[in-house]
Length: 357
Image: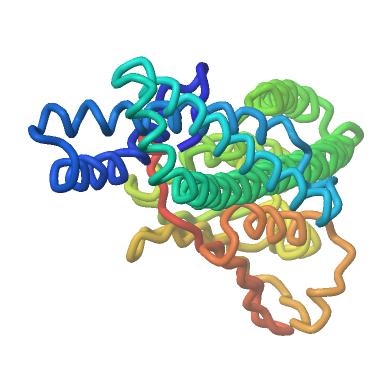
């Protein structure tokens, strides 16, 4: 309803707010003073157009005042001054137009009969203007505050996501180099091959760092995991056995980048590498009821569930936090383990397909 030269929609809303009063006055004029509908329209326009102009000026003046910083008494005094100014300007313009159209005698006659009511009506109309103005202003400020709060929260989540993602990268790089170091003395040719594969992995990490998206398709994530497994197989050989059941439907779904490799690394580190006979790592995925369910399991020694929450490791806690930040209650991070019964981590998150991401 606020008029503004830079906002035509606001001008149209402001003018539309006068339409009910205009129609009411046309009907009243037609029944009391106007011989024809044309005269009723003319009389009403003569009466209300000054009010429309004065009201627009009052809006613009009100916009320039810092209402929030004004004391209550000063606020009421300014409102009263604007109400009186609006009423005086309206009546002065109306009676001036009436004097030009009908002559001084008619103008004085109308002024004598309706002057008091004109002043009261002007104050009432301004009061309605002021009420609508402040409702719109307060709602606009609340809307802006809500948008600003949402943007601030989005930036905070983004910053925390980047920080968590940054924690995973050094963690992964350090552990990969540690695996390659173990090959340098025992098998230099395989260590050289592992370094070449590690260079490819490092290039991939740098590419992902340059990308703005926080998620990738499961197919892309599995490509990265396969490159990592190739390095670990050079070190562990046949001791590392990987089984996977991942349908094409699941491969098209998206999930946070670097969310699978740390789980695979955790399984290898605790269930495969320490054992003479190695162990099995099982990767499974499925899409159920609009959810992507992905799990990494091993047949290692397992762990005490109570100790998992206080474990100093980076990978599990970071992935859990990233899921919480990105999906909230729509995602879950579940750990199933017990001493001697292996270790399984299951991620459940919305099954967002690659083409719709």
